[in-house]
Every structure is written in C-alpha cells, then in structure tokens.
Length: 445
Image (spheres, rainbow, N blue to C red):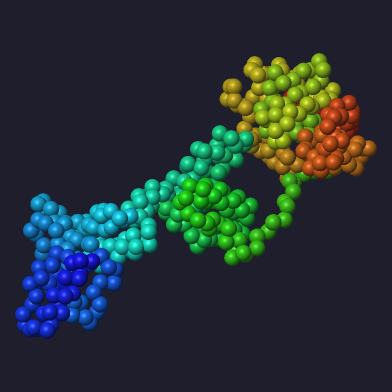
C-alpha cells in the first residue's frame, strides 16, 4: 500500500511538471513491483498508463528468445524461470493465507504463455476467495481413475461379500462395459453423459446386465463421494433419459411334473458319466439348486438317519438347511458312494474338483429337453400345489425358500421335518410311477 501511494503521488507530480520527464520514483518501481490488487491500477489514470507502458509484459516471442538464466516477470505473480541448462518453466508467486508461496505451473514446452496466465489468474481468484490452490492441486492429483476406484472398492468389500461369483462379476462387468468409455478418467470427472454412453448399447439388449452395471457404478460413486472425490452420483440421472427397458420376470424353463420321470429315464439311458446322471436325479429328488448338489459332501450326509445337512454358507438364504431323504434319494447316494473316493458326493472330471456348473444343464439340453436345470424346482413346486395337500409353509421349506411374510415366517420356525419327509417320499414315488420303462442306475453307460 505504501509503495502504491508513493507511485501515485510521483505520477501526479510528474503530470504537473512535464510529460516528457518521467518520475524516477515511478520508473524505479514499475518494473520490479506488481500490485497485489486484482484489479490493478485504474484504467485511464496516470498511474495506470505509466505502469502499463513500463511493465513490459511477456510475449510469446520474448518467451522463446529468453536465454539468459533468471526470472522474467509477467502479471498476477507469474514469471518465466530460465535455468542455466536452458530449460524454461513457469512459476507463480502468490499470497495464500497471509503467507507468500510459490507454485510451479509447468514447462514452456507443455504450457503456453496464455495457458500459464490463465492458471495464474485462477490461482489468484482461489486465494482471494480464501481457498488454497496448492492443496487443491495436490488433492486433484490424488484422485484415482475410475478403473483404480473400482479396484479399491472391490478390495474393500470383497471379503464381506457372501457370493464369490457375484464379487467376480462386480469386477468383470465394470471392466467390460465401463472401462473402454471412462476407465481412464478421474473418478471426480465422470459425467452422466459418460455413464449414458457406456450403458446405452446394452440398455435394451441386455437390460438386466445394464441394470446391474448401473447399480455397481453407483457403488463406486458413493465411495468416491465419501472420499471427497466428487459431490454427486452421475448414474442417478440417466434412467429417465434412457428408453424403458423390459423388466418383466422371465421364468426358468420347466417341464410338466408328469414328464420329469421320463426325463430321468432318458438321462440314465444316455452315455454321460454315471456321476453326472446321479447328480441330476438327486437334484430332482431333493428339489434343490445346482450349486447345492455339485458341492455336496459326504460329511454332510447321514444315510442311516436319512438326512442331509447343508451348511449356511452354501445356502442362498445363508441359513442351514436340513433335507429329509426319500428312499430313492438314499439309493442314489449309495451308488454314488461306490464311485467317489473323496469328500465330494458328485466329483467332476478332474480329481478332487466339483462338477462344473454347465455339466448337468448341457446333458439335459443335449437330450432335446428345452428346460433349465433350475426349472425342475418349478416342476416340483407346481406338483406340490396341484397334487398334494401340503401347506404353503411346507412347500417353501422343502425348496429352502426364505418366507418373506414376517407373520407367516414367525409361525414357520419349525423345520416341519416329518411333513417334509412324507412330501419328498411322495415326490419320489410320483417320479417312479410316471417314468414308464425303468432304467437301472447307470443306464447305458
């Protein structure tokens, strides 16, 4: 302020005495001093005209021709630094929080004079508004890309995710459908347009996959918000902008319960491995899911009591499930025991490894049945509803379904074991009755 005042008085005196005789005081300060005031000298004033004339701002030509080591000043604290090696870089002196600081703004080979001035101006405005441009720049360099954020979120949550398959899909779907579009972008710079560009190609053709990808993008963005990398979730705004996808429930293909016995006979008559044939029949007899059958272990089964206890971690509901075994189911297990030399009841082609997810499905479809393995559960459920007097609770317990109605669930805390045992025995008898010509276990193989 004091120097500004001296310059101002000197300029007025000079104006009164002689326009051809410059003030020494003004001249001695004009090149070295650059006012902190953002607006600078008042345009049109004597001070403004003299400072503008004598400050001699940098030009692109001057920057190129500057070879003498030293500092060449411009506006807003910006200056060009020429090193003895000849390297040229931009820097800025700026007051932040009452302290003078210095910022590097990059090499002249990458940053033009105009770009350096814009950076300097932006930094001055930030400091004027009470912000710290140095800290802000450091935070911006610490922000991960979307691909890096996906890996961090996965590593954070994977240990607690129950379903390892879904955990793997979290990574694979985001890398497949998002990485090509914005995987390289900072997670704080991703826009709704970026998300739309990634999801539009699959929104109608793979609607369920697209919905899950959108949900997983949201998980990453919520993490980014919590970390302070961004303020909003760009995936929230796109659903209304995209065409309405088909959300109708697509049921698994199944066959009529009177045809299931014949299907079992056809399976045993095939040339597939005995282990695969037994696994499919056991799946049908118990009404359980493919995963629960493929990973079943002898240590879980008590043939004498006719019970199979599946641990909670293998059940979809994450609740231990006890399965009453029909006479036919026990016969299947007795045969399987002779073929297995490990703990797995139905081992795969590789020793000590479980049967693959597609093995059973491939066999059934290969025999000409347009059904899903999971569809046999539907056949059983419809048979219970149409051909038995079993209650809703008994049927749901048999399928290991979690009863959503809290009131009904409260009355169904019992495992209803004896009722379920009678139900599973009737199901086995129905399959035998409708099978037609009976083929011995193992069939043509």
